[in-house]
Image (cartoon, rainbow, N blue to C red):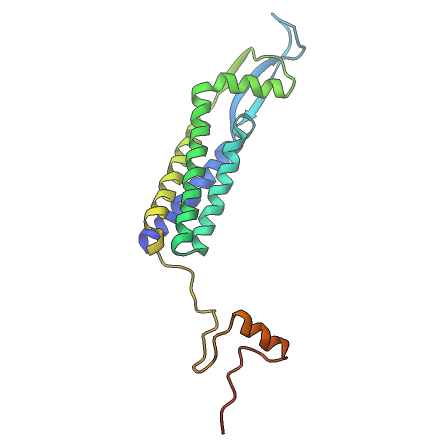
Length: 194
């Protein structure tokens, strides 16, 4: 039970860190106000978030958060499938952040070009991409734990499910639909002989 809570908490908190990190400013570029101007031309600063620089990473953070909820609602093989999706989401978010760390200048230039801005004169980068990378790694670890150990974890409570009554025919399939067609409630106990 403890492992289950730790894994779910890790995935959920790390996914929120990834989402928040991609929403934060990763770079501030100083660009000329008028294209083609150089020297003492007026400049302005443009803030670029992680989501603007690497849009896929932010979406993968949301996928990981949804995966944490999915792990709560599933059992056995469903947990393995959702755990695998969480692994991919965490790995993708972390790799997106690492890509910015390695090729940030090219991503900044692309983002500025997409906004019809002149190339940057100077760029100041923040450390938010590192938080996104670490968050992605933690999501990946939590997802891997769900794949390996998830089927053994407890599931949602079954206390609100209707229990089968002794002597009642199983409800389901064609027999239940036929009973409804006859105007009978298939969940009612069979009449007693007497």
